[in-house]
Length: 116
Ligand code: AMP
Image (cartoon, rainbow, N blue to C red; front, side):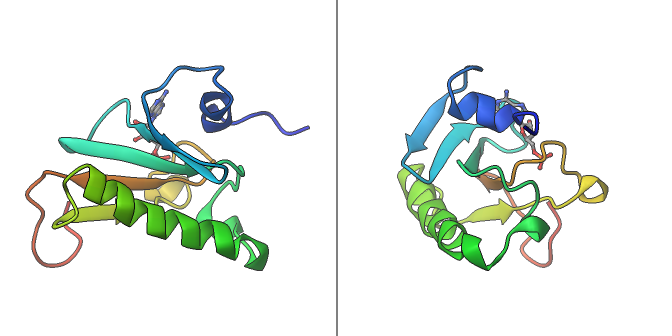
């Protein structure tokens, strides 16, 4: 059995986290080290290591995450300006190898390009 990821441990309640939302496909928690005044993580229960490891069978999960990202942004009051970030691979800054979407808001973003 592969070792459980940090996020699987949070999903299972073995490590505490501030959960904002959960359903049978995903959970949303506050990031422990926020990079913006609003910074939450949307995590599928299925431990897909990286976005690049997702396959056709994960389409419904990925679609669900995108819809929930919009809903959660609305609930957090940042739907007018938020950024979704997926780090894929260590070279892109991924540190937890269990797919997750960062939802970042309440921050002045560079209005052009990807400057954070
Ligand atoms: P990434 O670098 O894209 O893999 O993102 C991993 C994120 O998980 C980072 O933003 C961390 O701050 C966050 N993180 C790490 N441990 C925890 C934890 N116990 N609870 C909530 N967020 C965490």
